[in-house]
Image (cartoon, rainbow, N blue to C red; front, side, top):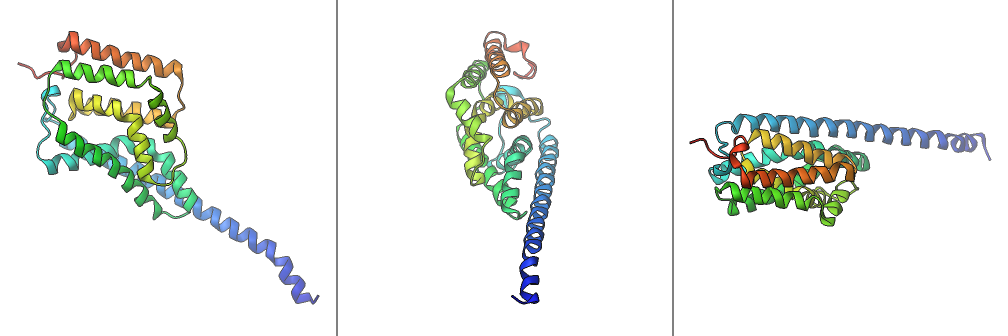
Length: 240
Protein backbone atom coordinates (compact mmCIF):
# COMPACT_ATOMS: atom_id res chain seq x y z
CA UNK A 1 0.00 0.00 0.00
CA UNK A 2 1.39 3.38 -1.01
CA UNK A 3 1.51 6.46 1.18
CA UNK A 4 -1.19 8.04 -1.01
CA UNK A 5 -3.53 5.06 -0.55
CA UNK A 6 -2.96 5.11 3.20
CA UNK A 7 -3.72 8.84 3.33
CA UNK A 8 -6.95 8.39 1.39
CA UNK A 9 -8.13 5.60 3.70
CA UNK A 10 -7.32 7.64 6.79
CA UNK A 11 -9.28 10.60 5.41
CA UNK A 12 -12.54 8.67 4.93
CA UNK A 13 -13.64 8.85 8.59
CA UNK A 14 -13.03 12.60 8.61
CA UNK A 15 -15.00 13.01 5.38
CA UNK A 16 -17.85 10.94 6.76
CA UNK A 17 -17.93 12.95 9.98
CA UNK A 18 -17.97 16.19 8.00
CA UNK A 19 -20.88 14.97 5.85
CA UNK A 20 -22.84 13.90 8.92
CA UNK A 21 -22.17 17.25 10.59
CA UNK A 22 -23.30 19.07 7.46
CA UNK A 23 -26.52 17.06 7.32
CA UNK A 24 -27.18 17.65 11.01
CA UNK A 25 -26.64 21.36 10.50
CA UNK A 26 -29.05 21.36 7.55
CA UNK A 27 -31.70 19.57 9.61
CA UNK A 28 -31.25 22.02 12.48
CA UNK A 29 -31.60 24.98 10.13
CA UNK A 30 -34.66 23.46 8.47
CA UNK A 31 -36.25 22.77 11.85
CA UNK A 32 -35.66 26.33 13.05
CA UNK A 33 -37.01 27.80 9.82
CA UNK A 34 -40.06 25.51 9.97
CA UNK A 35 -40.85 26.56 13.54
CA UNK A 36 -40.52 30.25 12.72
CA UNK A 37 -42.66 29.94 9.60
CA UNK A 38 -45.37 27.90 11.33
CA UNK A 39 -45.71 30.19 14.33
CA UNK A 40 -45.40 33.27 12.14
CA UNK A 41 -48.25 32.08 9.91
CA UNK A 42 -50.35 31.32 12.99
CA UNK A 43 -49.73 34.79 14.42
CA UNK A 44 -50.57 36.49 11.11
CA UNK A 45 -53.74 34.42 10.86
CA UNK A 46 -54.80 35.54 14.34
CA UNK A 47 -54.42 39.15 13.22
CA UNK A 48 -56.55 38.54 10.12
CA UNK A 49 -59.26 36.67 12.03
CA UNK A 50 -59.48 39.17 14.87
CA UNK A 51 -59.76 42.07 12.42
CA UNK A 52 -62.48 40.42 10.35
CA UNK A 53 -64.70 38.95 13.07
CA UNK A 54 -65.72 41.88 15.33
CA UNK A 55 -69.34 42.90 14.76
CA UNK A 56 -70.26 39.57 13.16
CA UNK A 57 -70.72 37.56 16.35
CA UNK A 58 -74.31 37.33 17.53
CA UNK A 59 -74.04 33.94 19.19
CA UNK A 60 -76.41 31.27 18.00
CA UNK A 61 -77.95 33.67 15.46
CA UNK A 62 -74.63 34.32 13.69
CA UNK A 63 -74.72 34.16 9.91
CA UNK A 64 -71.75 32.99 7.87
CA UNK A 65 -71.87 35.55 5.07
CA UNK A 66 -70.93 34.78 1.49
CA UNK A 67 -69.23 31.53 0.56
CA UNK A 68 -65.95 33.17 -0.49
CA UNK A 69 -65.80 35.31 2.65
CA UNK A 70 -66.49 32.40 4.98
CA UNK A 71 -63.96 30.08 3.34
CA UNK A 72 -61.22 32.73 3.48
CA UNK A 73 -62.00 33.52 7.12
CA UNK A 74 -62.31 29.85 8.05
CA UNK A 75 -58.86 29.05 6.64
CA UNK A 76 -57.41 31.96 8.64
CA UNK A 77 -59.20 30.74 11.76
CA UNK A 78 -57.90 27.19 11.35
CA UNK A 79 -54.35 28.38 10.71
CA UNK A 80 -54.53 30.57 13.82
CA UNK A 81 -56.06 27.92 16.06
CA UNK A 82 -54.47 24.71 14.84
CA UNK A 83 -50.94 25.50 13.65
CA UNK A 84 -49.40 26.13 17.12
CA UNK A 85 -50.50 22.67 18.23
CA UNK A 86 -49.30 21.19 14.94
CA UNK A 87 -45.81 22.65 15.34
CA UNK A 88 -44.22 19.41 16.69
CA UNK A 89 -45.49 17.44 13.68
CA UNK A 90 -44.21 20.14 11.31
CA UNK A 91 -40.82 20.07 13.03
CA UNK A 92 -40.61 16.29 12.80
CA UNK A 93 -41.32 16.52 9.09
CA UNK A 94 -38.72 19.24 8.55
CA UNK A 95 -36.11 17.33 10.57
CA UNK A 96 -36.81 14.06 8.76
CA UNK A 97 -36.42 15.59 5.30
CA UNK A 98 -33.83 18.23 6.15
CA UNK A 99 -35.55 20.53 3.65
CA UNK A 100 -37.59 23.65 4.40
CA UNK A 101 -39.52 23.27 1.15
CA UNK A 102 -41.20 20.15 2.54
CA UNK A 103 -42.94 22.29 5.18
CA UNK A 104 -45.33 24.28 2.94
CA UNK A 105 -46.69 21.08 1.41
CA UNK A 106 -47.18 19.53 4.86
CA UNK A 107 -48.87 22.64 6.28
CA UNK A 108 -50.91 23.24 3.14
CA UNK A 109 -52.30 19.71 3.04
CA UNK A 110 -53.01 19.88 6.79
CA UNK A 111 -55.02 23.08 6.37
CA UNK A 112 -56.73 21.60 3.29
CA UNK A 113 -58.32 18.97 5.54
CA UNK A 114 -59.69 21.67 7.83
CA UNK A 115 -60.87 23.59 4.78
CA UNK A 116 -62.94 20.58 3.72
CA UNK A 117 -64.47 20.57 7.20
CA UNK A 118 -65.34 24.25 6.71
CA UNK A 119 -67.01 23.54 3.38
CA UNK A 120 -69.17 20.88 5.00
CA UNK A 121 -70.08 23.23 7.83
CA UNK A 122 -71.03 25.98 5.40
CA UNK A 123 -73.45 23.65 3.67
CA UNK A 124 -74.99 22.38 6.90
CA UNK A 125 -74.92 25.43 9.16
CA UNK A 126 -78.04 27.42 9.96
CA UNK A 127 -78.67 30.04 12.65
CA UNK A 128 -80.14 28.06 15.53
CA UNK A 129 -81.45 28.27 19.07
CA UNK A 130 -79.84 27.92 22.47
CA UNK A 131 -81.22 24.40 22.92
CA UNK A 132 -79.35 23.19 19.85
CA UNK A 133 -76.17 24.94 21.05
CA UNK A 134 -76.48 23.29 24.45
CA UNK A 135 -77.08 19.88 22.91
CA UNK A 136 -73.95 20.22 20.75
CA UNK A 137 -71.88 21.25 23.79
CA UNK A 138 -73.16 18.24 25.76
CA UNK A 139 -72.31 15.93 22.84
CA UNK A 140 -68.85 17.51 22.58
CA UNK A 141 -68.21 16.87 26.27
CA UNK A 142 -69.32 13.25 25.99
CA UNK A 143 -67.10 12.77 22.92
CA UNK A 144 -64.09 13.87 24.98
CA UNK A 145 -64.53 10.71 27.07
CA UNK A 146 -64.79 8.21 24.20
CA UNK A 147 -62.11 5.73 23.08
CA UNK A 148 -62.35 7.22 19.57
CA UNK A 149 -61.31 10.62 20.87
CA UNK A 150 -58.37 9.08 22.76
CA UNK A 151 -57.32 7.17 19.62
CA UNK A 152 -57.24 10.25 17.41
CA UNK A 153 -55.57 12.35 20.07
CA UNK A 154 -52.80 9.78 20.44
CA UNK A 155 -52.28 9.61 16.68
CA UNK A 156 -51.94 13.41 16.60
CA UNK A 157 -48.79 13.03 18.71
CA UNK A 158 -47.19 10.35 16.53
CA UNK A 159 -45.13 10.64 13.36
CA UNK A 160 -47.16 10.74 10.15
CA UNK A 161 -46.33 10.55 6.47
CA UNK A 162 -48.19 13.63 5.29
CA UNK A 163 -50.02 16.73 6.40
CA UNK A 164 -53.23 15.27 5.00
CA UNK A 165 -52.94 12.21 7.23
CA UNK A 166 -52.08 14.40 10.21
CA UNK A 167 -55.07 16.60 9.43
CA UNK A 168 -57.46 13.65 9.43
CA UNK A 169 -56.23 12.54 12.85
CA UNK A 170 -56.47 16.05 14.26
CA UNK A 171 -59.97 16.56 12.88
CA UNK A 172 -60.96 13.35 14.63
CA UNK A 173 -59.41 14.60 17.85
CA UNK A 174 -60.83 18.14 17.80
CA UNK A 175 -64.12 17.79 15.90
CA UNK A 176 -66.24 17.93 19.06
CA UNK A 177 -64.55 21.15 20.19
CA UNK A 178 -64.89 22.69 16.73
CA UNK A 179 -68.58 21.85 16.50
CA UNK A 180 -69.01 23.46 19.91
CA UNK A 181 -67.32 26.61 18.59
CA UNK A 182 -69.67 26.67 15.60
CA UNK A 183 -72.72 26.10 17.79
CA UNK A 184 -71.88 28.72 20.45
CA UNK A 185 -70.61 31.46 18.16
CA UNK A 186 -68.65 30.69 15.04
CA UNK A 187 -67.53 34.32 14.73
CA UNK A 188 -66.70 34.74 18.43
CA UNK A 189 -63.08 35.65 19.10
CA UNK A 190 -63.54 34.64 22.75
CA UNK A 191 -64.77 31.13 21.98
CA UNK A 192 -62.18 30.83 19.24
CA UNK A 193 -59.41 31.56 21.76
CA UNK A 194 -60.83 29.13 24.34
CA UNK A 195 -61.13 26.27 21.85
CA UNK A 196 -57.68 27.04 20.43
CA UNK A 197 -56.09 26.73 23.88
CA UNK A 198 -57.85 23.44 24.63
CA UNK A 199 -57.17 21.89 21.21
CA UNK A 200 -53.54 23.03 21.25
CA UNK A 201 -52.94 21.68 24.73
CA UNK A 202 -54.40 18.33 23.77
CA UNK A 203 -52.03 18.06 20.82
CA UNK A 204 -48.97 19.05 22.83
CA UNK A 205 -49.62 17.25 26.12
CA UNK A 206 -50.23 13.55 26.82
CA UNK A 207 -53.68 12.50 27.91
CA UNK A 208 -54.26 12.52 31.68
CA UNK A 209 -57.56 11.47 33.20
CA UNK A 210 -57.08 13.91 36.09
CA UNK A 211 -57.34 16.77 33.56
CA UNK A 212 -59.36 15.32 30.71
CA UNK A 213 -62.32 14.02 32.74
CA UNK A 214 -62.97 17.30 34.61
CA UNK A 215 -62.66 19.18 31.33
CA UNK A 216 -65.20 16.91 29.65
CA UNK A 217 -67.58 17.24 32.60
CA UNK A 218 -67.17 21.03 32.52
CA UNK A 219 -68.14 21.05 28.83
CA UNK A 220 -71.18 18.87 29.56
CA UNK A 221 -72.07 21.19 32.44
CA UNK A 222 -71.80 24.20 30.13
CA UNK A 223 -74.16 22.50 27.69
CA UNK A 224 -76.69 21.81 30.43
CA UNK A 225 -76.44 25.42 31.61
CA UNK A 226 -77.08 26.63 28.06
CA UNK A 227 -80.17 24.45 27.79
CA UNK A 228 -81.73 25.50 31.09
CA UNK A 229 -80.49 29.09 31.41
CA UNK A 230 -79.12 30.40 28.09
CA UNK A 231 -79.23 34.02 29.26
CA UNK A 232 -76.56 33.23 31.84
CA UNK A 233 -73.98 32.64 29.09
CA UNK A 234 -72.74 36.02 27.79
CA UNK A 235 -73.01 36.57 24.06
CA UNK A 236 -74.92 33.38 23.38
CA UNK A 237 -78.21 35.00 22.35
CA UNK A 238 -78.74 38.39 20.69
CA UNK A 239 -79.79 41.15 23.08
CA UNK A 240 -83.39 42.26 22.60
